[in-house]
Image (cartoon, rainbow, N blue to C red; front, side, top):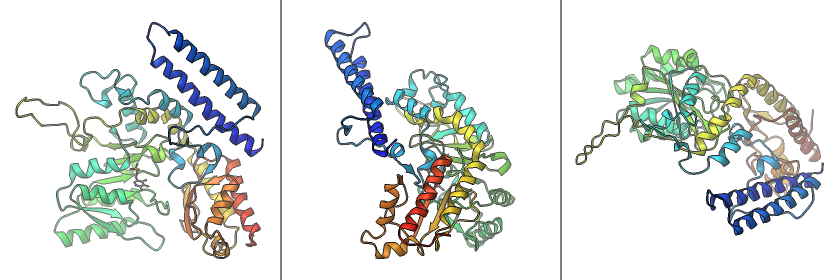
Length: 457
Ligand SMILES: *Cc1c(COP(=O)(O)O)cnc(C)c1O
């Protein structure tokens, strides 16, 4: 199948989906007792249009419709291209999640059967309560809640346990949202230095805890560590770091933004007090979504319920959790998470294969003379940082499009997601690509190199 035929079929698929939504809207505007004449006509017209679209789709021909939604262009990036964007790979929706999105897109759609005690994680239809129990089991912790992104998980923890001026130990590769979560709670970040391999060690963490104790007279209130950091996706020794933190009696938050949902995570084995994951980064879910899981020991603290009483009305709001503002993800975000979950659980079992694909892709990439991988080698993750200063950047220096020559060439081969214009250091993520897509991407790197006269081993 030619590329243009494939592209046309993708756009025709969207056109058909949108036509079905127009059809659906007729039902929403009609009486439960039946359609009137005008509505019947509207259905017939839409169906006729749909049949036309399906015919075009079958033949792979026809007029290309822009499918604009007002001023919005439909997003067809995941259909048209191989996307190696560092943060988008494992948040791509499953077909189940996309179906859940279209059926639960309405505002408070999770609340149809919300009954006393009126809290999101207690709803049994759809099975949200059960999902929460499954989430806790999934990361082997006692309790879990869904949160609007990993960042809100960090925030729930920091705001529950920090006092103003408390120190929090973070990695020198910590994500900005960890800084903000400490800041919003009135704390102060204290960064653990990296070793020569860009790793956070347990010894360095212990040393930083000691330093904080000397400097401030008190122990830090929390250690927050990324299992795989977002800059290199190097693996840090969370097991030993958790052990050290506990030796000092300091709780540890395991940041699983780049693990929960793609590789097995066992909170008890790690010895974590808190596990945070990102739905839209690693659990094939819509944004903003994520999870915060904890132990029976910490649950009453981070999931503290409201104690407030209205001075006039004497109203109280029972079991609403303060840090979660009562309820968190009330519609399509949550339902996308739930719909993807069976596949997400299953896919963590294939992590080794994902890592093999990542290593294969980069081995091929390294055949281009002058290319380097800045992340630890061999790769233990699908996200990697590479340096092409001495390969593709040499071409960029002389090319009229500068660094954009590389993105142009990749795009021509159906690959997007590397930072456009960047030819020195950049990141890519191969998560979820098929072997065919991996091989195509590898061949594209080599092909572009050869085209511009770079040596290929
Ligand atoms: C992406 C990322 C986050 C933020 O995740 P959200 O779910 O978008 O809040 C936090 N920490 C790390 C290490 C990340 O890579």
